[in-house]
Length: 463
Ligand code: AMP
Image 1 (cartoon, rainbow, N blue to C red):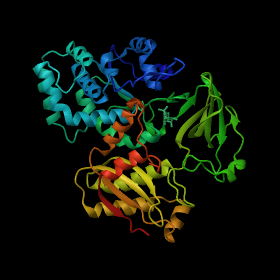
Image 2: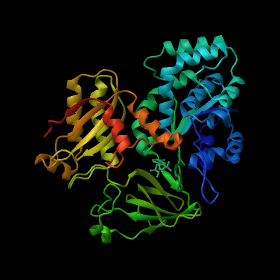
Image 3: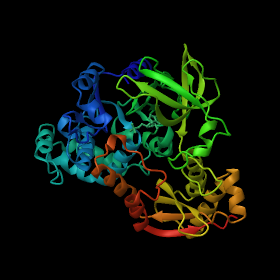
Image 4: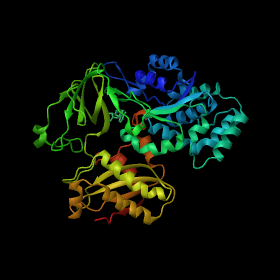
């Protein structure tokens, strides 16, 4: 992380200022053996070295610790936005661990900006923020500032569908920074919309199990970002992925195909152009741990491989001989939402499910969309989704009705926020949140949230 920040500094020198960081710390707990346990980001943010390093790099978070470590993420988000506005002239960049949090942050801004302006005008925090520690920390920063409130109000009212919001609010910001590849790619369009002409820089490649690679060329667009493996961070091995090797099906390994899995190769034995699953052996004690990520080797930086993140390995959508991955779903949604784009509508978030309660089973895609959209367009989107799964197993099964027509279910606004709240309520870190792109039958609670919020449903007539 620090290496990458140094590289970023070289490309985008920042002045002595602050950063608007949408970071949140979840709760830590004690194991029976007395060890403190928490999510990776929580441990990172709580580590005194983190703050020192950020200060040294002139990237201090504009929000006080009480906000970052606040017990309620909704309240923390509101305060992050308020601090950002108070220090708007000093903000050098906007960041989060995963870019979902940035999009989530500015979507929230769209809803609360008037309340933020009232707080700034009067120098008093809304009563919605209830935690005394957060209130007293914010009271130290908040002074009545009607000019600033007027300015923000004027900017917000003058905006065209919030295009270039970040640039307007933070005139000295140099870039937006966070993980933008993999499951974060669907948020890029919205992020670009908010960013206007501000560059988007994809952060490095890491996981709770261990850091993996640095983006040594951060100026390339996020879609082309690659990561150089940090060879001293762990011992890396790579399982070659060949077309004829059986994939994991919904997290379970098909025994009959186990023997066909190729032997892992070492760091320097990988081949350019090939895809692999990463195995990590770490100093923290993980031994030959399968990360479940598929990467493609795009070249070498010195002797270390340069990787492009491809997808999570497990198949998500499969009923019989069909195999569709996270990438396939992402591509299908992208293609179908382009039909929407003409209607100036936007897919806010999406997920999927294999419904085996019907005979034959069928794919269900859940969409939360922005604005009113006609039935005709959504029917066409549903057909387009069905046609966009081009996997031969899927297409042939659809043709003979071994898989039923794909179903597009539109859920009401706020459904994906409810899913996020559900996970945060279980102790997940908002900073590391990733929308589940496929909800299996065992994830009953999330499936229930999705199903309870369906407002419309369409079946494909594409086959
Ligand atoms: P976590 O479960 O929060 O530790 O997240 C780790 C996972 O996030 C990795 O195994 C990847 O699947 C994903 N991830 C992390 N960094 C990136 C990246 N730069 N691009 C795409 N996916 C990433």
